[in-house]
Image (cartoon, rainbow, N blue to C red; front, side, top):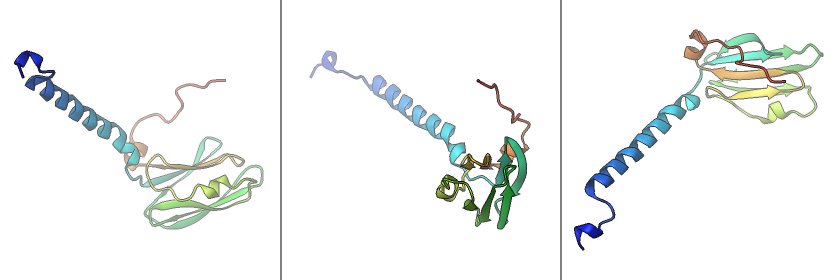
Length: 135
């Protein structure tokens, strides 16, 4: 086989391997924080933070909504699960356990959101307000 008939040169292969490795590295780097374990639970109702609870302390909490409904959740061994709710669909209970940063349990009828955040996200000076509101 002549050198003129080669599809890839040695440098083409080296550059291609470098680009593939760089792509894999940046993909892992960009998506890794979302899968990191969180260590704080934010309890929000109607967009307002009611409580922040550490995930390293087991507890059981009941939150009452303005409309009279209640939700009960537990923090156990670093994970959170909704165990009781008097809403109609019980989607929040069916969500199951959450334990990683960014995961959440939502009860739409009671406008309640349980979301795990990492302590560095909570303690940083980033604003928690939305960038914009669309109607």
